[in-house]
Length: 299
Image (cartoon, rainbow, N blue to C red; front, side, top):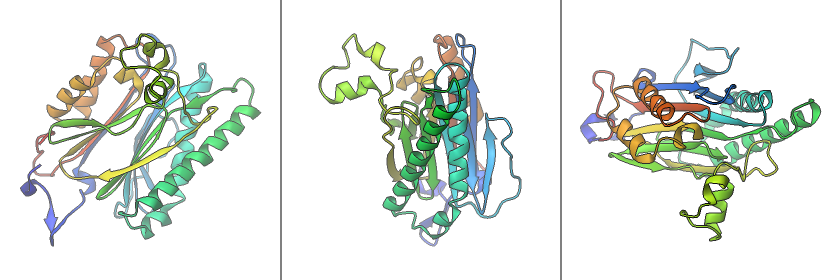
């Protein structure tokens, strides 16, 4: 986006106001599965957490708010049969939300350019929730082996912090180019990294959906990455129900042509369903836009 499309005050690019964030999320069971084990949550962090949209029942949506400190979006894709997978993804999003809400002092006092502070906070949150889910699986009947992916986006202007566990993904579109910032934590990717397999190996398809890291799993390796944010970016979080049917080229095409976050989420959902819809599908798209005019998504 050209500098004239940004809000500049005193030489500093100002963060978007709440009404300048175009964001939407949806989740769908797909065409094959009988249960939806995905969950998502979109919220902003003020003096308390303000939930804007969520797939989880019973989540309270606050309507009053002070100045926004951070913006939060999460996708979780449950692992485990039926109720266990859905419960795992819901439990983790609820627990992470509570943890972040109780850590508001971190966001009041932290320097948004201090990556180490935010990395430690998010890694600690992931490990605490992993331990809590593991205990729950051991204590409740029929819950053994339940786990979930977690892709968490924390926008603390002018930075983005991404917490990644599993194979749900985060992409951003900037200057028309699509970048996958997250890295799939799967057996297939691990074997590629070790040089055991190549991307053309026929074994990859079978291993591409076997997680090497998950919240509640045998191994949990949270990865936190910090990158700059700006007015020209479009953000996408999704479960693998989207990316197994819709390639990056099509995703980029949709985001470049988007008219609104809601419209592009619905278009990408249709693409995934048209491609087979073999898994649950969850999508969140967000972008900053000027209130008086919406700039092009990719430029």
